[in-house]
Image 1 (cartoon, rainbow, N blue to C red):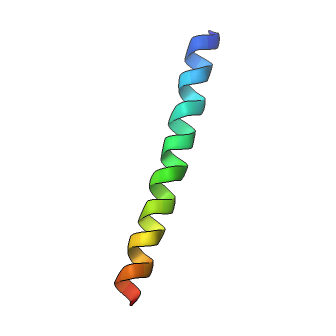
Image 2: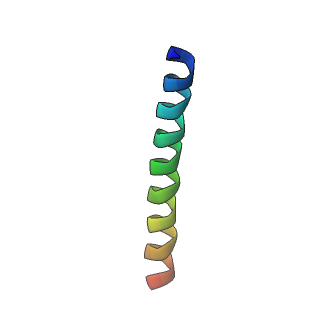
Image 3: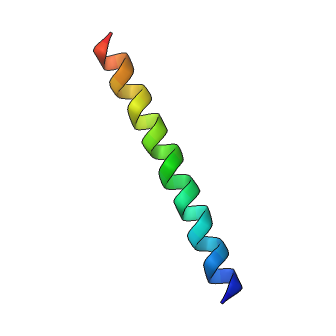
Length: 31
């Protein structure tokens, strides 16, 4: 169970990182 929970946390961190990158790309598109 703990392994599954750790993977879930990693996925959440990755999703946040992707969201930040997406915001960065939108920011550059705005320029």
